[in-house]
Image (cartoon, rainbow, N blue to C red; front, side, top):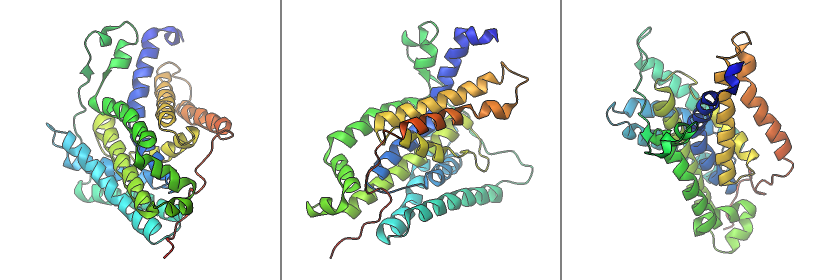
Length: 311
């Protein structure tokens, strides 16, 4: 119990929270673009798990960024099916999204078992070293927690202001919000709704794949079926908690990551407490925040509705 009063405990929890939040930051930011454009892209879990597997199989132990790029491209490829069926052929977005998740989970499990011998050694890659920021990482207590992370985490953190700028300060970002608010009005003003939704969905697939790759190459290091552990659906919850805002999505991802890291570290403190009870902590916190925050959140009015161009 005394360990809860130690600064090192909370420093480690904070650092672990940021590391665990990294895949969620990628996935939730990408999903923000898709849902703001009106596409209820719930195939995010599928994008993440194909990104995780592709990154592992392509990554060179001495050059893992190649695997990271491959993971993003795998998510992009799977999201192209969402574009085809839901945006182009106007199939139900929820059905297609669940179908892509099932496809992603099924095909990765099949490929993994097909390429890994029974009882064989798991495919794995070495986890990356941490980038040390001189002086800042030497700050007592929280220096290492804040300023000593792998480049995957720094990339995710750096992506947040870039995504916010694209979303709120560019023509593309304005078009995304316009087609999510009222696609007919946007079309009347000369915006190609199908094109904008296509690009937004592909961005979601790319960043979802990056999220799976960051999980695999930056945190786990080895693949197992269902290795993403429903993080795609967690990213969807984070997005609703954030009321479809970029900065809010990043903050929500960290909140979930922090409490997930807290539940892991508490296992070492309360050794007699059921593990399942401690593992439920981040989900209980997310549910509580979602229950309170949903009252003030405002989803894009056209979210989940297909658009048919008037000829």
